[in-house]
Amino acid sequence: MLWVCLTTAPGGDARRLAYNHQRLRQRIESVLGFKGLEFIVVKTREGHGVLHALWGWRPPPGWRGKDFYVPQKWLSEEWRRIHNAYVVWISRVRKGRRSLRRVGAYAVAQYVAEQRGFERLSWSWRRSLGFPLAGAWEALRKWWLGYVGKLGVVRLWERFLSGLAVPFMPGGLPWDMAGVRLLYRRWRGAVWRMAPVWASPWPL
Image 1 (cartoon, helix red, strand yellow):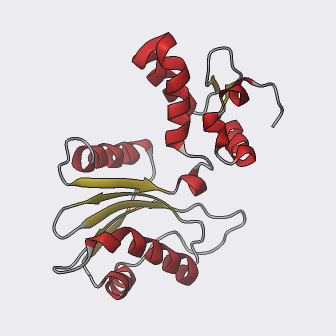
Image 2 (cartoon, helix red, strand yellow):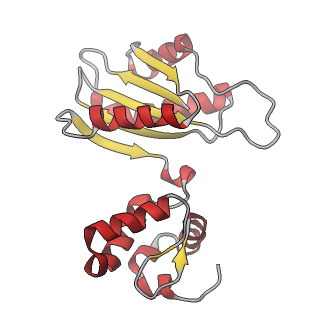
Image 3 (cartoon, helix red, strand yellow):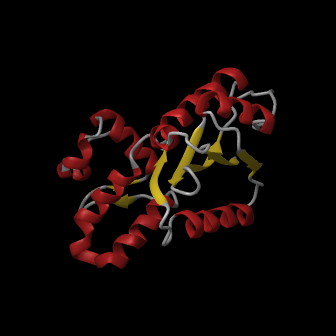
């Protein structure tokens, strides 16, 4: 994983940050070979417009290439060419729970919690999970809130995120992330609006 900060130069167009971030990721995949790049990005109004991103890449089976890293100089030159801004920052995220907790805590404190400069959060849900996480949360909350309350819904959600199977509606079958991913692919998103599907005994 890499921790990245991409800026906008004075007079630049911050409205193109998301689009230019996509172009940059495409360059990383085509030039550096890191296909399937995953990301989570927070856009803020700091300076003239800034993207704070976490990039992740999983080596394919049998991979014998270089480690996942994007050189600072290359990144700066590409960002200048794409977004007309050269100020970038990149750092590796060290392995281990402690490092990941620190990154998560810092991101929430600086870019989410009471952050007046916060504009938008986006991430590669299709590549990372294979289904929209927000849609899964809404389905769980919709059917359980009246039975177990807010705290109960949060506990069910935490179990689901930890990899355990939970029923998405009272009396329904339990589903884990792999099952929801397959179900979402089959129904192409309609599953969030079709409660009977969650309780059905249909095999995946």
